[in-house]
Image 1 (cartoon, rainbow, N blue to C red):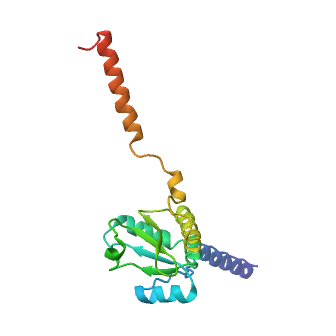
Image 2 (cartoon, one colour):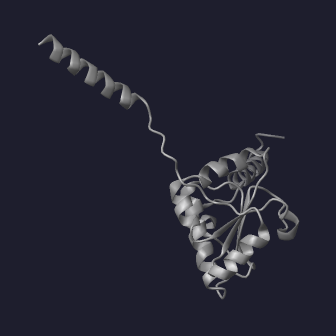
Image 3 (cartoon, one colour):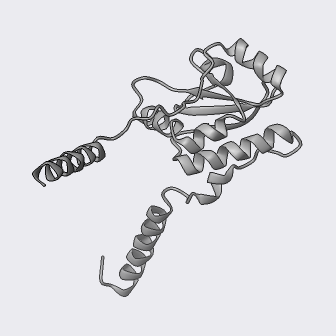
Length: 178
């Protein structure tokens, strides 16, 4: 009986230890082409749009964006594009702010651009939008999906300043303030 209890405790301990350690499974990542020419040639031959990512090593937002680019949803969506690392291409595309992602059609013509950090859900929506634009060039790329979810920055400040101004005028009229 003691032998059975000992084996039971050993098996239980092994199961407990096994659940404490996380099994690391290699997650596929986006395979970035480092050569712009090679990426464009692949895009033309496969009739796929490109996704060109511009970043800097010292940029905190770029580091966060790279984490988002490792998300499974983003990786799956990126299979619709030819991903190209944009180092050295900033002047060609007029990149002023990073992180930035430029989407082009299969001929290398820009169809859509993202500037700044995007979370995974928003980035996937933007990628879907860019994919539609690259397949339908007649559709103007005026505003992407995230443009509808944003509020005008500083609107609250403007209202507050206007309210203070109006109240000040009212208080002066009533004689409370000289």
